[in-house]
Amino acid sequence: MTASHDVPFRLVIHGGAGAIKQSRLSAEREAAYRQVLTQSLSAGYDVLKIGGSCIDAVTAAIVVMEDSPLFNAGKGSVFSREGQNELEASIMEGSTRLAGAVAGVTTVRNPIRAAHAVMTKSTHTMLIGPGAEIFAAEQGLEIVDPEYFHTSYRWEQLQKALAKKQVLRDHDIDSNRPFTNNDKKHGTVGAVALDRHGNLAAGTSTGGLTNKRRGRVGDSSIIGAGTYADNRSVAVSATGTGEMFIRTAAAYQTAAQIMLLQKPIHEAADTTLKEISSIGGDGGLIVLNVKGDYAMRFNTSGMYQGTIGHNGIAWTGIFHDESEI
Ligand code: GLY
Image (cartoon, rainbow, N blue to C red; front, side, top):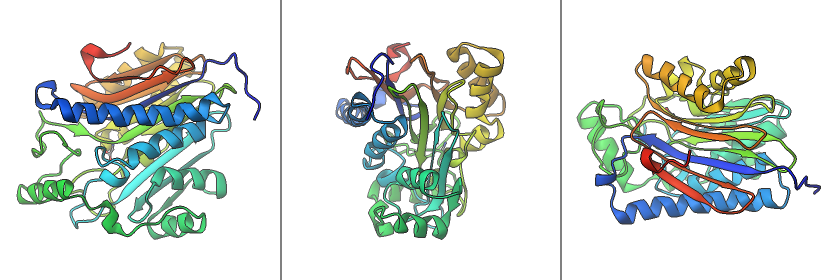
């Protein structure tokens, strides 16, 4: 593979934003989160450093988080009202603006791989439900019994949510308390990457909401809402209240402000988050451009996040006061 070594490749990831309170996050759990974030960064870095594509780096980074029970994606996905785990993911590359997405899948171990396959092995952009699962199996992706996604922690969360007739907006892994307006976490995972060829990609994966209605689809599988990439502007992945991110076309809105209004990337992300806030939502965005400039912005108290560049030094963060930029 030919690589342009003068391009400063970079990977930025998130593992969900929300009301993550330092005082309530045990040292052990914080270390566990940081460990998986670092493993995710390392997986993407290994692809980028040898000249691999941004799409493969994004996929590799997200697979690590999907395979961890800590995050609300893949293995750690939350339960719907009917006691099922309905997963979704999307991916997009900025050079061609090709994209792939799946939603409502219950047997695909790594939905981001299925989204990648939709993009690269089909003529479609989005597949849902059984059709997406059949396609994933045809592509040789790992199919699991739905029981694979059953974790007792998430099951207990569902029972509490059902008892209180609440929709939990996140995996709420640290406190195990039901959702209130002051207690929101969003466990979605995502990644944006710039490769040595100067190309951008973005990807996002989630289990959605605890006690969500069957068939509910969030922003994570919607191109332009939870995921967007265009080499002319930026790659974006979102985490937060999916309905509001869909209604504001959050990822595309961020990219459009940069491409059409030449806004600095931090400012564009903050403007989008303000827009989301104005209709009652919250969450975070990671943004990366072809120069390797990036932003990790959130209007919640915390966001699991990390980044790594060509020097190979991984940085992870959770709270505002430790944000790298
Ligand atoms: N942002 C993830 C979801 O709302 O499903």
